[in-house]
Length: 107
Image (cartoon, rainbow, N blue to C red; front, top):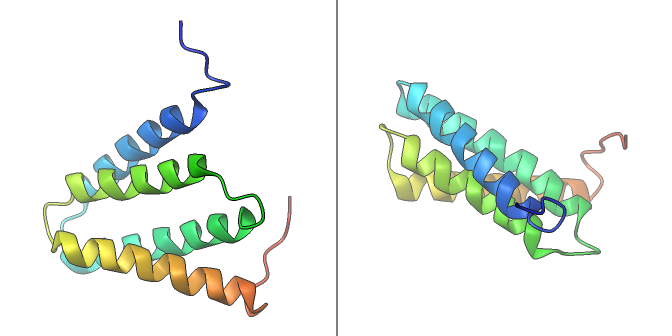
């Protein structure tokens, strides 16, 4: 039996890998793939900003799982460009949140 309380990062990373794979697989345009991965990177930057004080490798596994799944599922577009757009989305979103330009509501 799997203990999900201890293995949640791996499980969630796998779930995001599968979701990203199928979402990238159904898209039929490289431009749309780049836009989606840039927006996903922006969400990742928000997550990164939220955990900056208590950086945990678990969230890194989830973010990397999404990227790997998306890259595996994308039939169009360059894999290096996909990785660069994802990283750019994370970095830009993080710094926009850090500077207070983007503020999001806490739930």
